Image (cartoon, rainbow, N blue to C red; front, side):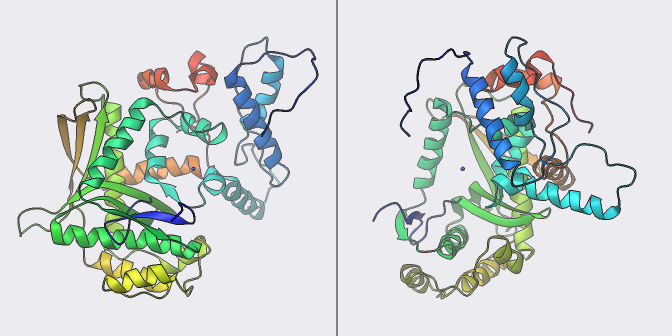
Amino acid sequence: MTESPSESLSDSPFNRNIDDNKNDIVPEIPIEIVSEEEMALLEAALVSARASFSAIPAIRCSTFSFRSNVRSIKSISALSKRRLSGCSEPDIEDSGGLKSAQKKTRMADSFLHRFRKKGLSVTDITATEWCEKQMEFVLLVGKRKVSKAMKKGSARHAKLEEEVVKKVKVRIESIEDRWALKLLNFITGVNQLLSEGLTRELPLIGFAEGVWMVGVVDEIRMPVTETIRNPLLVDTKTRVKDTLPAEPQRRNGRLQLMCYKYMWDDLVADKFPSNKFFDFFSLNPHHILSDEIREMTANSGFPAETLDDVVRYYRNTCGMLSPAHDQLLLRYEFQKDHSLLGEDEFAYDSDWVKNQIQGCLEFWLGEREASYTPEEERWKCGFCQYSSVCPAKNGNHNDPPS
C-alpha cells in the first residue's frame, strides 16, 4: 500500500504513533545584498502582511532592531513582528463590548488558532518554556534545522519502540478514520500495558486548561508490586556528550513528563469532553469507519462502526486505569553507545505544571508578547539558529512585564 492515504500502525493491529518552483529568470539590475536570515524575516513579514487583509491584527508594540545600513530590512521588520493581539491602549470611550470583540480577535489571530488547528502538542509547551522568542521565530520564519543529534535521538526512540511494538499499515479514507486510529492506538497500548506491564510511544489526546493537547509518552511501566497499580511515566533523553544536562534542560524534561501525567490523570478522571472534541475538529461522530478499520476493531474484541463508538471505547479504557504515579522518571543515555548516564526521579508538582501551561498559553493565545530567555540562561542563544537576527543578541529588547 502507498503511504497516502494510509498510516503506519503498530502493536498490531494499530500503530500508536500520533502522534508541521522553478526559479524565474530576471534581468540584471542593481540589487541590495541581504543575508539568509534577513531574507527569512522578509518572507515572514510578507506572510504577516497577507494575513492583515483577512484579519484585523494590530502591529506589535516592539520591533526588531537591525544594522543601520540595511534600511529596507529595518522598515519591513515591523511587519514580521506583527502582534497577534492588539497591543495599543483602548480609548477612554471604549466599551465592554469592544473589549469582548478585541478578545475574540486575539483568539482568532493567535498562534494557537493559526498554527495548531490539530491541537497543541506537549512539545510545543516545552519548546515555549525553553525560549518563547525562539518558538515565535519557528512559527513565523520556519522550523528549526534538524541536527545530526536530533536525528540520532529520533532513531533511538524508534529503536526502543520496535522492541515492544510491531508496525503494520492501515488505509484511512477520512479525517474520522485518522482520529479513530489515534484513539485506537491508545486503546491497544493500554491493553499491552495491562497485560505485559510495559508499553512505549503511547499517544495521549486530552483537553487541558481550555485547549486540546496531544502528546506521546516514551514509556509507561506498571509497578511490579500488586499493592501499587499507578503506572510510572518514563522519558528517555539521548545526549551527545557523556555528561548529564544543565538544570534548565532537566527542568524542561520534568515539565514534559508532568504534562503527560496531567493529561493522563484528566483522562482517567473521565474529563474527555466528547462533544467538544467532535466540534473542535469538525468531526462527524456518526461517520461510518472504513471497512479495514471496522474489521480490525471486530478482530480485537471491541467492534466499532462509527467514530462515536471508538470515542466511547477510548473513555471506557481510560476508566480502567489508575492515576499515574506521583514519581516520574527521566533517563539520560549516551548517544554513542546507549549507555545510561543517569536517572532523574522527581515528584509531580500539580501547581507548578499548571502555572507553566497557563504561562505558555498566554503566549499561544496572543495575550502577551513572547518573552526572551532569562539573562542567566542566555547560553541557549549559542545553540539557536535565529540568534543572529534575535534582538536578544545585542540586548536590543525589552522583556514584556510578567
